[in-house]
Length: 286
Image 1 (cartoon, rainbow, N blue to C red):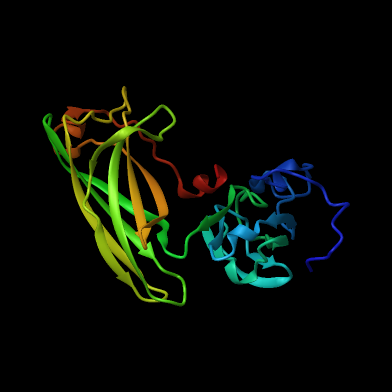
Image 2 (image 1 turned 180 degrees about the vertical axis):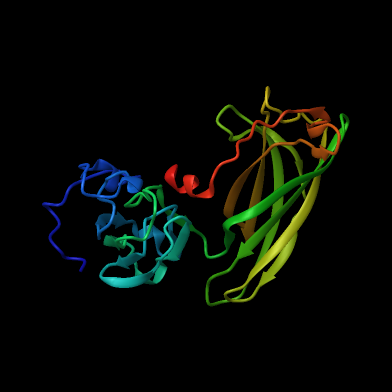
């Protein structure tokens, strides 16, 4: 319930793993680190949503919650995700109240004997409240490759999924710019190259892909010693207004595997340091 009195609840920051806090219990199995990771925890957050967010699409993105998570917004069940090792998102737009106070409640359930190793507990990765225009680049909606690279030029192929989750059709124009990246991975200076805008019509609830290829002169390559990067910026305009700007980091490089000389990065042999690791130990390290 939105008006539930949680004043005596503990305040904490995410990410958070309640199981790792212990205490250790020698009665618990050794393979699960003798930690009390099974059980039902609850998380709550109350926040003010500006009235200016009315008309936006607002999603909750949960990178990792262990497990069987269920999300309520203002006392109404929104949805959830049972698997604890994958990310998911929920559309909060119909449940939120712009210009008022809103409450999120998340219930998790780690069943006993559900894991042979310590699986973690709680909301163990970041959580994001993402606000976009009604038409925007979809979650994780861009994909970039560098199919042709020489010392003189490089082709950068960029695809983007454009989503219209609303109830009315929309027409937009989509363009992409490529920048050098600064030390923090953000666009620096003026665009090196840009695509011509592409007109795109979207029905209500439809997602469509767009694709373009940009050519970069004298590319600076990404390698292990000098991981130089660029930034592809996808721009969406509707009625001559910029409604979305989506940044995607890009490294220009070539990779290849040869039968007699192993892995090559930018035409040079690079040894790969690997390990034969049992799959179950992967869960131990999460």
